Image (cartoon, rainbow, N blue to C red; front, side):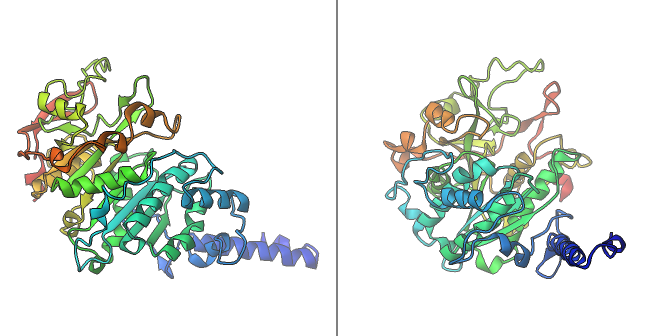
Length: 433
């Protein structure tokens, strides 16, 4: 290519060489991390050079530049929709205003030693239409809590839709607010082999930037880890509030499929306090009982029906809140260890089992928080299952109280649905120590 370039006229040679140099710099920028190469849990992950991507960010007093995928106008529209809750430029979920009175205690300093009290990790890939709602709600919650007390850490999956360009374009906006912002991209694809191992690596990578600055954290710092869900700021704040009110180690939402009526989604991960799935799926994979949640647990079913928090063995359900302490003690997401006797299970279920094993087993679902996904109407789940404010308006903090109990003797394993069996809740954990 270089030889043939010199056979062209001199004016073209200069243009072609300029293009080649640009492409080489772009390629180097995509593997550069603070002047070096990143060899972390993701292997092929990187933080993109700020020098290269600054060309696509809006600098103060300058117009928004075009991205490689998105136009300047498109990037500006997403920035506006993320930082302006009243923006109508793009579709987003219309959410209630934050109830400042209810969530005021979250503004109180939990630890004088922690400079970062709230951490928001995210894994995103091809989520461009979701960004106004998801990032917009996170930004709204951050503004309420105090931006200087918050960190947002995103690992983006090399999206072809321009997701990463928007994530980089908002960096100056977040930094002006005072948020600690980390963003890196990776080619790691969990849809290929070793799905659970890769999902665990992605979650760990989203947490790693803040774990690299432990002096900025305290054991009481709060992590709010969301999936690619349609969330409101009040969802985020309610998960964090219930973590405090309940004295819990982890709180989870409920997530729903867009069916008629909505059907609970995260049934493979969720395990009740008796160790069973939230609803019964027989070996023939009939979903006839999908609407009959906790049919063999009357007390849990009662609390669920009243939208009161209830204890479970494991959950994720689209989004969770948990304390930083177990992470500072070394806990990470991981895949099952079959040699040690663990059955097939997702990384969130194993994370919960590890919490129990380490003495952090106060895990609760907060059924006032309900998430949908962007593969349907933006407001379908909220209209059918309700906003947080619909359910907590008449609740007093004391009604959320849980009488915590120990783990079940056994937990149901599913590998796959046609092969379900029970094994001790701590199977494999003793062997790993």
